[in-house]
Picture 1 (cartoon, rainbow, N blue to C red):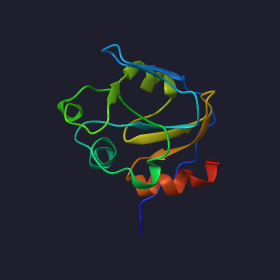
Picture 2 (spheres, rainbow, N blue to C red):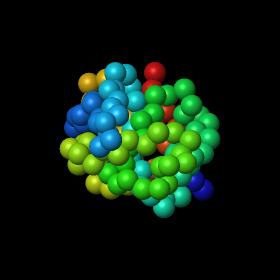
Picture 3 (cartoon, rainbow, N blue to C red):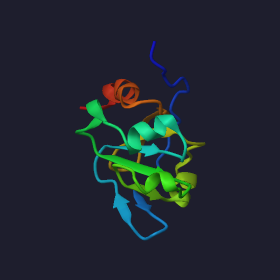
Length: 126
């Protein structure tokens, strides 16, 4: 049996502009999966270093509240944006939020694997 998220999403909007403490930035302009990751996290490593398989065609932003050496060799850029994590209402990593272009949270949950997240968000994608 695959792990799943159990808490229902909390209706809210999150900022659509994410700025890294090092100056890089990303703006969400379409439905986007934001994966909040942390160092030394196996579920997070699947997103930072692994094959995203069924999520490959979806815009994905990886963000962390914490800088760490895990991000140095990551296959995908990780924005270190603690202010965004705090203002988004994400209570902790590993977590994902699927947001639309206006920042409205469509769904969210705990991040275990690409397959698990893909299954949980499928009903929210067109």
